[in-house]
Image 1 (cartoon, rainbow, N blue to C red):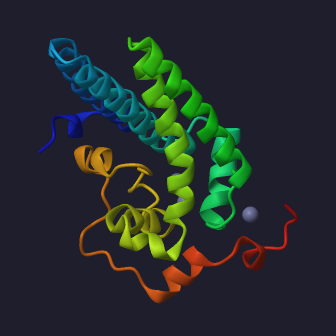
Image 2 (cartoon, rainbow, N blue to C red; image 1 turned 30 degrees about the horizontal axis):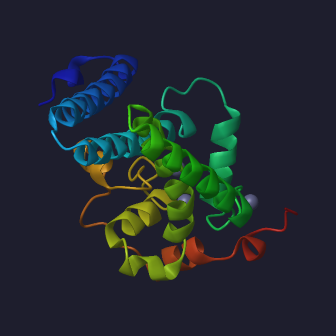
Length: 210
Ligand SMILES: [Zn+2]
Ligand SMILES: [Zn+2]
Ligand SMILES: [Zn+2]
């Protein structure tokens, strides 16, 4: 039995957010200590970049789980509405190819600056790269062929759009879902109906003009 089971639902929610953040800061902290212990500056750079990227993936997880899904049920937020629209029309995305290319180009510039500076700025570069990868990855997760590249993430995301909106919050790595028990149940199956809903084009699924 979990310690938090005796708490009120609201206290449980707070405890859960706390648990996630503490776990993340422990992991990031350990990585940072490792980075400072490296004798080779290229290794330090790589670990800092990785830590920055992981920080993004945790941010993505936390934002999606705690904010976009209205974890605390505080009225309605704009982001929640936009996100629920995406849940109803999986292929509709507010971000397009141009946005993706732009964020990618900007993060490549930031990465070049990080290589030049070779200091803690690398953390920020990793975070930005993570953000730009995420915008590509979410797009990829909605393409049928991506099951060959990232089958687990895609499965979790299909379930997230289906019967398990409270599971599968990751876009970039399955790590946080796995660590925080938000993987969809192993035995949950994906029906053809779910697949056709998930891969259906936005223009076919509703008439609203974009
Ligand atoms: Zn729509
Ligand atoms: Zn999606
Ligand atoms: Zn969602």
